[in-house]
Amino acid sequence: MSLTITRRLVGGLLKVAFATLERVAPGPGSVLATRIWLTPPHTSPAAPGPTGGRRSTVPVNGSTVAVEEWGEGPAVFLLHGWGRTRRDFDAFVPPLVEAGFRVIAVEASGHGDSAPGPQGGRRSLLPEFIDALSAVTDRAGPAYAIVAHSAGAASAARAVLDGLRTEHLVLLAPMGNLLDYTAVLRPTLGFGRRIDAGFHRRLEQRSGRPLTDFDVAEGVAGRVDLPPMLVVHDQTDRRNPYSDGVRIAAAWPGAELCPTTGLGHVRMLRDPAVVEAVVTFLRK
Image 1: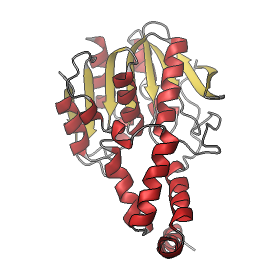
Image 2 (image 1 turned 90 degrees about the horizontal axis):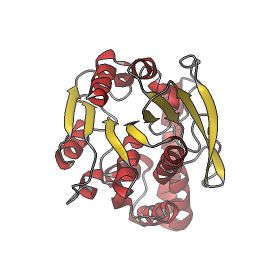
Image 3 (image 1 turned 60 degrees about the vertical axis):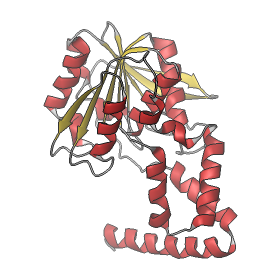
């Protein structure tokens, strides 16, 4: 059976199950929806990264997260996206080291080589991205810059809004308003308002904060103490729409927007022009 047919079959069965749960058991339905949301897509193990990396772990929330470090100099922290790993930033490491930076790649709980976090197994939440980044910058900082992708970008921006100090911030294909993304789960799985209400309530309980906190553009309002920011977003990104990056860059005081075309959501991380733009921004 082809992978496409298998996915369609599984998707169809899930919709039937959620339609039934919506009618007779919305509580268990919201538990299942939350569990699905917390589970990142599996990323296949990548080839070994740049040579000379120094690997370690940092304690976070009673567990540990994986860290890899290269070079010497001002510290640039790298944070991957949802379901991804530190290997996504391999193309950035040699140019940043050559530019005189110490590069520190962080993996959030439940991702890559990091141990499971409070959610258990390979599950995670955006606050755990924030916790991982904050713990590693406390250990290896101060941060000269943070470069983050997708959900990691939203988490990094939220961490800065919460008080994490850095001199520069680079967001690559950032996620916008989190509620726009959770809203997609309802038609995807086929549940209704009863499960949806429980799903959002459980997600906020597990996060320990309102989901609206992860709308970076809204969180910027009135702030004048924020570091310079570069936003790189592809106009053909089908995962996180280009409008998310535009909105964040417009809200963040003095932010620069660097649009690309034809790179999508992940390929930009391997694009030499994107890497060069980031290194140039950090060397200003």
